[in-house]
Length: 334
Ligand code: FES
Ligand SMILES: [Fe+2]
Image 1 (cartoon, rainbow, N blue to C red):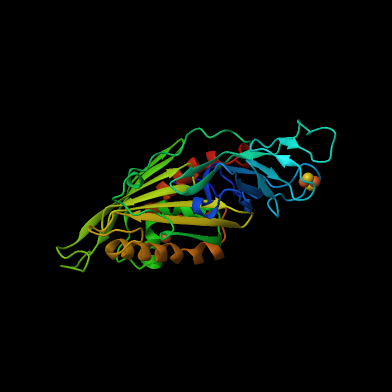
Image 2 (tube, rainbow, N blue to C red):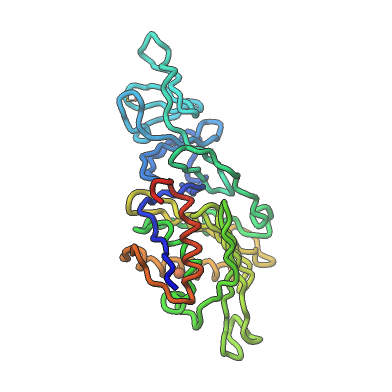
């Protein structure tokens, strides 16, 4: 069988919802300079609490409005000549001019929502509007689970292509080598859809042993459920060894780097209060925060091959996944 397998596109900015920060890190009246999707950006929170994200450069003579810019009401004031810009990217005031503003100017504006304490931006190279909103997460609607912030969230800036990270779902055979498991998980299901994918992994715990600390009654098959929104925003749900929801975003920064945002929540340990996980919830948090870093050396040092060679056991999922993933990139890169 000679099946041609797509390479990972050189273009690094698939469309989708991406995390760009945490709500608690941006107070009303605060302005931040960011770099994502290969663009210089300015993020600010108006006095009312609403958040705005735009291209950074002032359409007057090009100052970076995220550097020493300030908030006036809901608007952003450029630090150099004081021009005011509203949340829609319009120039609304020029302090020194007999014309009040240049109404035709329009800075590029990105859709932003705050989602359970995460600041999420929608990116599409052609500024196509988001086809869906981010959904409710039942675990985060109740006090029976820990909040994800600030104790259970972390971001790593690493050299990687977002697709490298997400392709972990096709790659059970790295798990024994990189993560030290006795056996690889089984990919039970990989359901590729228009706006994301659903998958289920079965992870054997305590295989071949009568009893272990986590499996006192013998081996357990843990079913882990994944759902990704577009390509690079993922959720992962564990029931065993402890009920846990992880949310991660592979947010592309520039031609080399991404920000790996990671946070998780676990079911509250019965009888405990407070926002800081304890007991098994804390153990799960520490373990998962360590596990995600074990993959970094691969992505940082690897080269994406134009013609990778897959073994028969992995070829089907990789082939299907790479074929599917291409629709998140611009047509001209296909
Ligand atoms: S460069 Fe922004 S107001 Fe002049
Ligand atoms: Fe991994």
